[in-house]
Length: 455
Image (cartoon, rainbow, N blue to C red; front, top):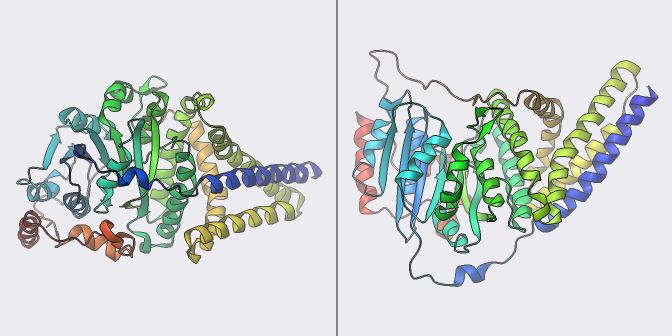
């Protein structure tokens, strides 16, 4: 029993030491840097931007909210939106959403005959477009009105190949889990990505809102399209893989905290765990490629990789040894429990201070979820890396034969969702507001939505 107690104590102590060093460095480098000089310089001609929205079995109202937020972008340059329907089974239900934008010259709808996967759907639109910049947006994501502008301003530096905005949960108020995920997103963006961005090496420009330089994409598109793992095509984890390809090609990748995108997150454990399993597999698949980049990057990035990979391993080892000590020996592993509790409260307290929100103290609930659910899930992911199943929705909620399911598209669809989720404060800072003056084109879409909703 002494062996178990010693193993648990040593592992948790090593975890505490590594975590303290890693999180301290992360907090230091995550502090915002004033880059206003870049934004203050006027530009005669803004770059053209192509927005790519791949869709598969998306809820019509969710898609309508996404497209409405794109139509309301206040970008002064040329903007084109490519909606790619990836062989959806509910194409008849989303057709009214496509029709709303049929007369808008900025919008194009690409209908793929078969489901080819998100990556190939993106590529189909990229090869059909010609803008200077490409913005990938998930079909369940709402963008603040100034997101395209702020990301495009960041991309004015020719050394930058990709940039991502800050993600928040549009359905944050729905359940305890969505609140937890919203805090998890804040930490991932404003700690992890913000610190990585200090060295121009964000390791994953997240799929819901990521902008790329077309000239860089042109160099990497074939590699991106033909990624294989153990002889099989690799489809998921497209955002992480493309980001690493950008870094490998010598481009910088950045994070823009005030370019805010609200995305739908899982509201129950089963879909959340499926999502985490898919993400874990993609992370493991691209880890080796990322490791080869480290000698060319700042030393902090090596610490970042060690902290994110060795830290969970030490935590898992200490938890397993402590559990065995409790079950077999009948003794309570006080040192392990108190150390983990102390580390959790310190991290949550620092996050609460940085975010200026007391709710982050509640993120302590993530620790038992991490130990008892996510760590075993990652172990399973490592053992099943060859599985390329997306584990997400396969069949849309298609009405039975003879049944007509109306698409209810309410006025101001893209704004109501954010407000209902308690996010209106986030989207009400100056130019970021989703509550914008409606253009003549917007009034035409409003009339069309009312007709569709009443049919």
